[in-house]
Image 1 (cartoon, rainbow, N blue to C red):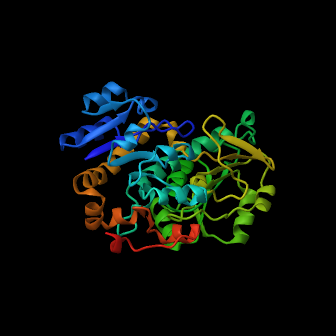
Image 2 (spheres, rainbow, N blue to C red):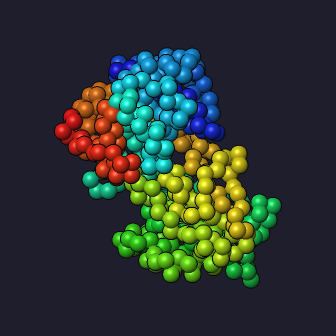
Image 3 (cartoon, rainbow, N blue to C red):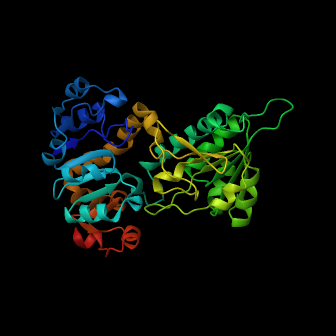
Length: 371
């Protein structure tokens, strides 16, 4: 099979869809890998590294799409890239389609694309093998980012996350007890913060409390509690995920208005629309804004700031699926792997994800029938 790896053009996106290690594994099995010139430079993978792994370097953005049978990216194609896409193409990426314009989805369907979303690949037990390590990275990054933005020169309250003898620590409120929330709670506790975790899933709260030996305060999420807790929080970490759907607003603008001046919101859910009503997407070069006196950090591709680690992690977890698709084709790979099948959003232009179909008002077809 011919595999394409384009250079990501999203603003300040430094990660790459496949690393030289992944290329070496795929070419060893007889596949051809086309890597756009400079695709790995942001993660410090040179064209020579890719060539040494067996890739062919191509020099235009069209080639990875039009000459390949399947494309491996980090994030979904942008509006500017729609004209590059090949009819009937196959693209694997973190898609987050619930936040794209309807006209982009219409175009994907017109082109008869097959789109597989890394964030939706799900094992029968409910584990998300590609998404989880990125969620864990984001959770680890959230607390140092909060600590940095609490500093006075960043517009924050001028306090430390942890405690100094005689001075109480910061209060960190974490919305969601999943992978992001657990990693953020672990990091915050390690720094000495007072940690509150809310969720509407008692099983997740129990698992988090057990893993962290009961150190964080855990409670079921209600509007009344969120209103009360946001008022006392120095930091709010938004870590809410509904797979394939837009994140719900848990923190309203009225709640933000009542937060402490100089407190910090890290909305990790922003790639799915954000779980704070006042959140709006920001970029790595301008990562924050202040609204109602509260510092907001809302970078959707936050792990792009650690691109070498993130690219290697993506290779580790996505390579088995890349090998399966390259060896069997999408239909063959999906038929034998229910986890991969759950990651299919569009199949040859037909909507097969019920949540996205409802969101866009598009009829949904059964994937098995199409296969």
